[in-house]
Length: 346
Image 1 (tube, one colour):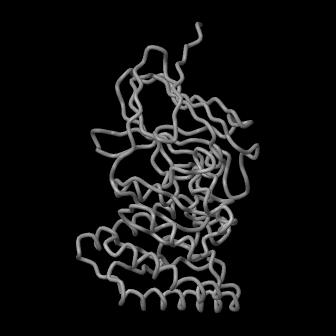
Image 2 (cartoon, helix red, strand yellow):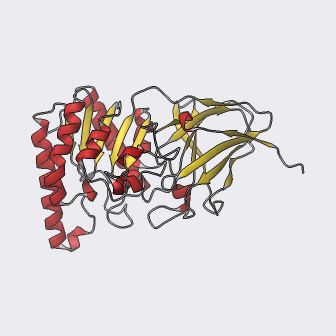
Image 3 (cartoon, one colour):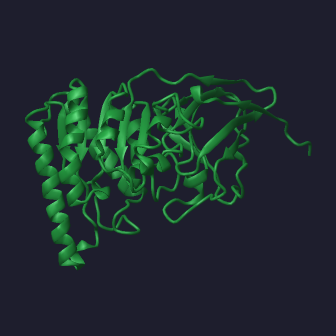
């Protein structure tokens, strides 16, 4: 059998949604180089391409991708190989008018920093709209999409809509997602039909004032702030009010949702841990609710029901994909209620 010929199309950062700043040290970094020394912990977490996606149209029966990754570590405890270093492919279903999952990187295919991956094959040759999500954890340096030689291929430009800007912890970064399109931020952005800037920074979302100032540079449609599990009582006391003052005052016309979170799901076994978590939750909610009187655009959402169950986590903190979907459903409902002025957060 004659081997199928593939034509490769190189993609550039300007083809992608999810880059909030153009001047970055590496092509697909998520934060500008200017914060390298002011927020070193956040900087270290910003090199991954989580949340970024590219749209393209092709009638090719097969879709391939070639990646150049920045790290030879292709998986880790919190991210399987598929989500850590692979891509996730969605196709638009014009009958159901929604994006549907189509294919992802098999975990056994990625063995080094330059994998060449066949995502789909043997499709009927029909023009389709595609969306491809980038790796959640590994750094992306180069990418090209391959289609059958002779097939049409065209990159669709990034949408001009104001994006959902979602700032938070490893939960936002995508820890324990099985695929790079299944993080809570990605799911919610699809539901709201908004571009996404994912600013999840594993272990490093501490509401620093420098981070708040950086967020004010973005032309967001909605802000979600979800740092709970990276905060201590001390950092809540020192950082939370100042962070929200900076962001809310700079963006008075933009809805800003601050999320509580389900407390550690194992805390019922340790009364001391539960007591500390209860105190942290009350303090965070108190600060947010006080500021809501000052800023009509600020909304605090309790997070105790986000996961829908206490059996949806591997470690008692990070949700699985079922819980991510449940959380995205709740957030979609609340955001649309606010947008339609039918819901007032209390």
